[in-house]
Length: 459
Image 1 (spheres, rainbow, N blue to C red):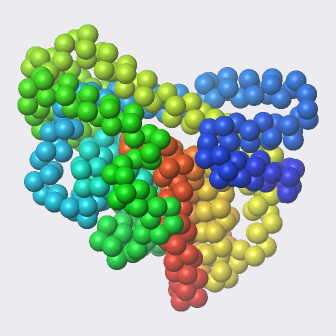
Image 2: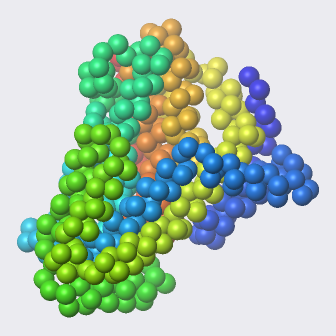
Image 3: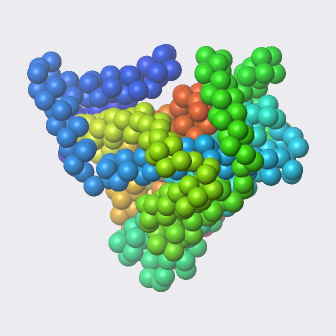
C-alpha cells in the first residue's frame, strides 16, 4: 500500500490541534494547517497558491459541498423566520409550562434530540433555536445546551433505522455482502453494537440529573453563570443579550405569537424527510408554509419576509465558509496519505478478539482529526468485515466499532459539521463547546473501548 508522505502526513494535524488549543481560533488554525499540508506537497513556491485556488474551485464544483451550502442557506433562512415570527418564542412559552428547572430544561432538550431523529443537520440546527432561550432562563450555560444537542444528533440518528446515517450504512453492508435482507432487518442487527452512540445518548440525562458530575471546562462554564449570570462566554454576552432583547421586543409589538407558526413548518420538514429521504424538499416546503402562515396574518410583510430570509442565510456564512475549509483540509491531508499511513501501520494488529476495539480506536482517531467519517467507513468496512469472519469475531460487533468511531469523530471533532451547527444554533463558537465536550467524549470513548474489548472475547 502506498502510504504517501508517511509520518510527515501527521504534521498538519499536530499543528492545527496545537493552534486550536493555544489560540482557540479554529478557522485560522485550519487555514494554517492547509498551508502546511500544501507546503509539504509543493515546497515554498507559488504552486501552493495555485493549488489552494484549485481546491476552492474544485470544492465549488463538487457534488457534496454545493448541496451542503444550499442546505445551510435554507436552514439559516428558516430558523431566522421562525425566530422573527415569534414561533420559537411561543414554543418557549408553552415549554415553560413543564420546564421548571435546569434539569428539566436539559431533559426536554434531550427528548427533542431523540424525537428529531431523521437527520443530524435538522437536529443540530433547529433544537438550539427552540431551546436556548429556555435553558438561558434556567441558567444553563450555552456550552451545555450545545453539548446536549450535539450528543443527540448523530448518536441518535445512527441508532434508528429511519435516518440518513442508517440508509448510508445499510448501503455499505450491501456493498460488502454482509446484508441480505431489507434495511430495517439488517440494520437492526448492527444497532446493539454501536456502543459509543448508546453510551453518549445515555450520558446526557445523567449529566442533566447531576449523576455524572461537572468537571473541566464545563464546570468553569457553570461557575461563570453562577458568578456573573452570563450563560454565554463573557466576550459574547453583550452582543447576544442585546440582540435577544431587541428580537423579543420586535416580536411582541406585532401581537401574541402562535405556537402553530413554529410547529407546522418544523413538522413539515420532519414528515417530508421521512417520506422522501430528502431534507431539501422538506426545507422548501417549510419555507413555503412560513410564507403562507406569516403574510396573510400580517406577521410579516412580503419585503420583511425576504429580508429575514436573507438575514438568516447570512448568519450561515461562517459555517458555510468553514465547512469548505474543513473539506479542503481533509482533502489535502488525504493527498499526503494520512489514512493509508495510519491503517497500514495498525492493520497487522487488526485480528482476533482485539479487532472490534482496535477498529473503534483507529476510526475514532481519524474521524476526530477531521477525516471524512463517511469516507472512513467506506474504507474500513471492506477491511474489517473479512478480518472478523476470518478471526471468528462477530462481524456486526466489529462493524459497530467502525460506526462508533465515526460517530465519536463527527461529534467531538473541533471543526466537524455537527460541532459547527450545534454551536451555531446556540450562538457560541465551536471551540466554546468543543473544549467542554471533549473530556466527556473521552470518558464515553473509554467506556466504549472497554465494551468492545469485553464483547470481543465474549462473542
